[in-house]
Image (cartoon, rainbow, N blue to C red; front, side, top):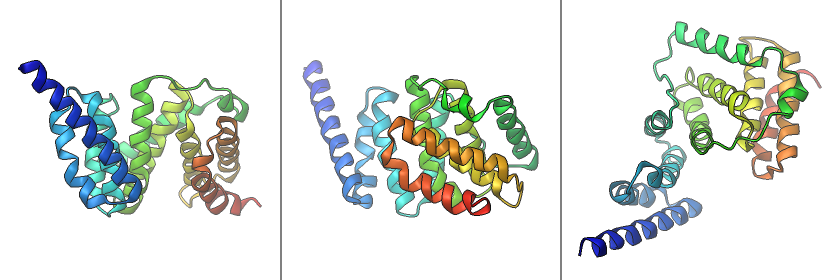
Length: 223
């Protein structure tokens, strides 16, 4: 009887997960948010929850619940081994700036484009949740937004590239071109890295986001 019960729970969970995927596609975020509780409760392990968590944070961000999106993403990321500070002090900010700059020392544009492809499942998943956090932090916790970008860049350098890496480099370039830095030459290089990496990986799904940042926030200072 126990085996049958477990099988029933697994089948029901898979059906609910499939439903959450469909609701995310059609944009029915209130229903998705309510439905997410069941697969999260019945999942056998943390890995089984990841797809539902991903849909949930997308729904929270799209419906304007940015703080909840951030908190959920931070919780998931901590379980993936990536601890993201939420209360950004000056000390934390400058420490993160130093770390990302250090990670890029000595790396040319070609070096960055020649990085291996990211294969670690946890790191790929972490990049996905960091990506979910970009708009949410930009909207409701601006001091946290560059910290997210810095982490994405550092993970790319350490663990390899994925499609989200192109978004990371474009956002890092935008930060370099901002009034805080006015480092237009390096910003322009990062924008080229983002565009070239996107083309190299064939990641057409991120083209609007990368181009919006590169041409709207970087290249306007150079072209």
